[in-house]
Length: 172
Length: 188
Image (cartoon, rainbow over all chains, first blue to last red; front, side, top):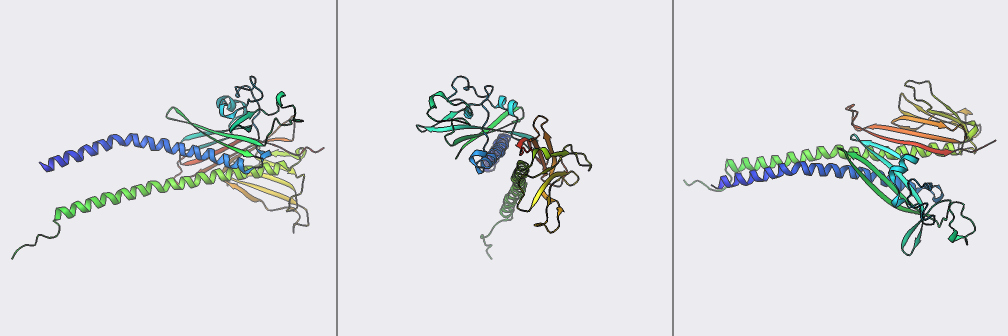
């Protein structure tokens, strides 16, 4: 009788493990792809932060991918709300990385920001706002010495689209 | 004579051996699965670092080149990789004394070389210096000029590094850095 109970218990454990395995395996695979993508994004952030402030290129103020350029020129060009699909069509990807048959597409968006009341206020380059005319000139937009870097990595796996976004700032 | 009851029966010993065997096999399998993972991570870090270092060096050298002296060509080596060589005169002499520079891909060894033309002194032998390896595992390097402005150059780089010697095309890490734009010195 004891042996029978033991066999039933062991069988139940083995079956439940077998049922759980495909889900666990899929989860591990997805996590691995996220890890690779995050690594790919972090590498670019690090590379850009190692450059001088002036050498970090600002993304052009395109109305196709920045939704708020025309509406509010003062606070437009926010990389946190950029349309990545349109941006890729306009400026192309930053880099492509393929591993295990999965291609990761990396895009970079950089915009001018300023710390206003604990939050980051975004500005468009080459659009001197009328409200800030007390400053003599803005040859490269209202540059307060702070740039926001946003790196977007996207990939598809088994027909599903995934993405990882990483953000950091570089100061003058 | 009474029989001692201490010790293990044959069945208990067999069970112990089987359980230990299962644990050891699980450890070995886990280890053998993790070793390629770590190796692949190493390859990934290497390919990302090397591609960026190579691209940065190319852009840095081109930035110091005179736009009007730029000559983009396709080396005669097989397989042909279009527009994979540039020759140009440097605006500012390098610390090595180089006044002209070349960057090219050797597709037979998948290696990108740089080559300097140096005056004497400081070079012991003036003229063409031996080529230096800039990056390995490079399967594509292309330079594209701009007919409207010869100072603008686009550079694309591709590296393919296999994880193992299996020859399986899926066991390769590939990175492509497309169309990095550099502005050379505009000289009359």
